[in-house]
Length: 382
Ligand code: CU
Ligand code: CU
Image (cartoon, rainbow, N blue to C red; front, top):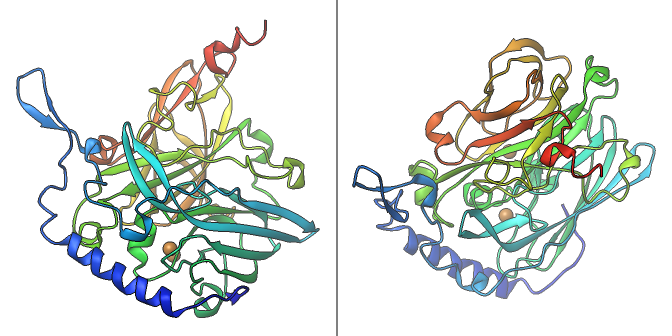
């Protein structure tokens, strides 16, 4: 990344060193209580703790972020030519509720975790700018959709500075993007990840059959900014989010309209528990999902309960066409386009078929009803 703005560097380095000290100190002796959450008394009289009740913020935010809860800065995506797009994103610090009543002081892009969805067309040139609003820590952006020298393209952007680089999205796919600043695990696990879809120039062979499209991202949460915990312990929460293009200036720019709900990586984000954010479809409609597992550590086993995925394009490349799949494996950072039909009315869950992760939040729901809308849609048509 090229530096666009320059500020005093000395003070920043001192701050970062202080921070590094904080992080290490906090990590010691904190491992045993990995699953410590709110104790509840079960019907058999035993005290139990549910995994996703574990509060990652059970120790203090690092000093320079302590009173920080930055308003989300909307992403900018603007097509400026037939094959040229400007994208501007912001690294920032924002509180996000990751499970009912549990806030996490996330490091993120544009106030969302996962970050805002980006969609471009195969062959597009992208002029990318990253602003860093974090007052203390450098951040960066690594797009898996790119062929570039990482030392240059994915270089750190210092606090209160901006950086740019230009790349061509030459391969189609559902790609992860993430902060690549050292230690990468902390930056991803604290929330700096997202998805960029590069649409194939010639489309997918099943484009004409699709009725509804959703974008679903899976990620994990660990103890806040605790590298030891992130390295050595299972996740505390595993969550699905739905992502839309709501910040796109004009959906007609690319012609994409994803019928999703924009949610953050929250335990109930797209579950039955929340009628506002759950997904809807009509019986017999063909549903396409662009899915990605941003990790940072776990693999995912994407499965729709009560259906079979008729067509699957691994990593979102039309050349990788598979059919009739019960479960699609997603390595950390892996993506796919999956298509299926929910034939009967009902409530269909999609999960990662690793059920320890389901019990930590890794589940979403599609409600299939006659109208394909909330409340059966009948109220809305009056
Ligand atoms: Cu970062
Ligand atoms: Cu990566």
